[in-house]
Amino acid sequence: MNQITQYENNAEKNYSLLSEILLKLKAINITLLKGRMQRGMLLQKIKDEKLYIGFEGWVHTWQEFLDSVNIARETARQDIEIFNEFFDFLEAQPLLLNTISYERLVRLLPVVKKDKSSLSQLLDMAARSNRADFDNNVREAKGKIATDSCNHNYSIVFLKCSICGHM
Image 1 (cartoon, rainbow, N blue to C red):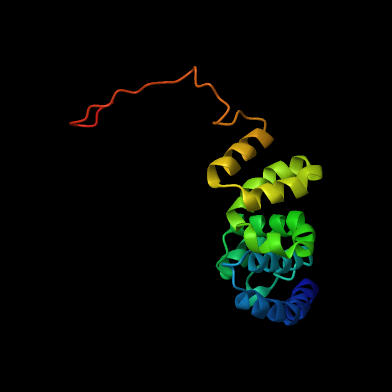
Image 2: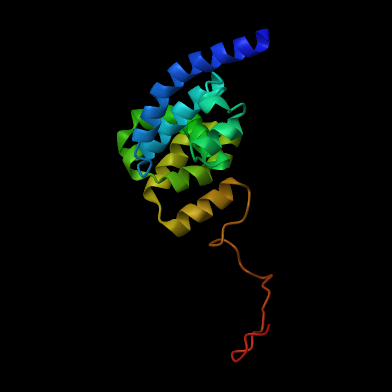
């Protein structure tokens, strides 16, 4: 009986804190990178402080909370990680914040996690390079061979029938 009372008290306390955060979360424009970072910050706070427990009277886990607010788990993870890895640097560089796309930051996450010392160079490259150059730079940063520096000696040729499409 004591656990039920404690759970209800926690749920009420969390609801009062969470309701304010959820209003902010719903008002965020996620089409902008800054909005995605704000969402990551709010989700980080909710997750760290476990404010989701008792939400809507039935939520007990992070996954249940994300399901109830219609945010995919992987999207929430990416938003939180992008906030943690890039926010401090991009907040000081508003021009980069307006130039870099969310998708490019997602692709840079594994590279930045390995080596944070090249953060400035990677973000500058992400803002200024075209798609092919960005793809090749990310490949090289991951230790793979870029498509523009490969001599393609090991090509595989597939023959495809132009009539039926059989390979």
